[in-house]
Length: 468
Figure 1 (cartoon, rainbow, N blue to C red):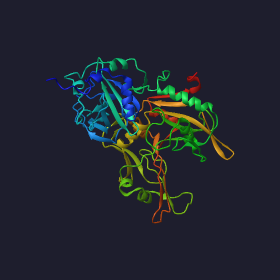
Figure 2 (cartoon, rainbow, N blue to C red):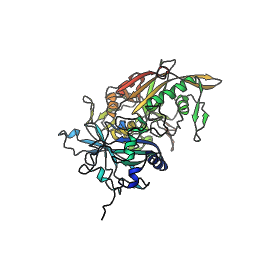
Figure 3 (tube, helix red, strand yellow):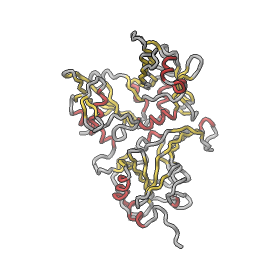
Figure 4 (cartoon, rainbow, N blue to C red):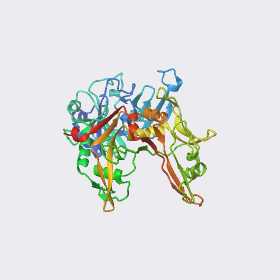
């Protein structure tokens, strides 16, 4: 009796083309397609290597990052036996379009090395791909590729390419855009001239710069730019020019880049103010257990400008120093500042009162998830604002700043050095009423001149020269 063929050993899988695989993935809703050439150690035993940090993978949507202890025997230091797991909405796809869910697929980040590994991708799945992922069979073969299509609902559909077939050979000369050291994006549009998302970003920003003064606008749900008259329109207007809907989703803005404009009084960047990096809600402490309203009533203060029946919670909170308005002190728990290393998987940024009670906290896992999604690579664009006929107009400079190669430990180091801080602007109006009005603004900010401390590479780029 002939042995059963594996999912990727069928006659159709031997002759399938890249165009056909792309069409299958797009029919499933994939709008972006990524490719990884599998190395000899990329198998079910060793776990495929996906990068050094989770921030290397902002283009792969993950579930909530969770901390868990590691049973690794590679280190004797118990403080270093830690890991973070992030689930994936992952399925395998056959050459016939059949879908095989992989319910245990996940990314595992080991900060002690550091490295991110792909795990659990066969366990619990009906896909028959073990032959090509078992190191004792063909799981070390050269010529294997992993193709991953990412859909808007955060599903990932994957196709395994085996050696010596048409598709494996076709991928060698395919058009790719480099998005990380080990993963490339398939150039579906066949732009040809775009070798990286960096080039495409610079080209688009130069177009916007050359438009000069742009009336304030905001992209609506119908992808139409509507007039925006408020004074905070610099970001909305830039997003509209880039085709970005202001939906509040914590994902990179444009081609995998986080786009941030910052106000200046004149170009290139004179008068740059504080830059808000993220606005996460606390997920621990009194704030979490009793609610934000009770938190403000307990630790806030009466409005300093005399607004009646209003309480505020604000002020710059920096590590190791008591904030005089709130009498709270921010501390890093589970972080070795000297080594710039996480030492406790359950570590957190905490606000402590005078009795060392945790009034609010942000777990490392929560903030790591946000940083991974948004700040793997970021561009900062200077913006001037003027008033014209009672409306605001914006002009975007040509001298931009590009930050790449970050990780969450660099964020914690910046907090320890007090260059990055918690700077909330929470207000509670009608505070004495039965139903007070709460306006949340939990923000972590940095002085613009210290942005370079958050990235391994920080470039000042004249886009007019770069595109010439």
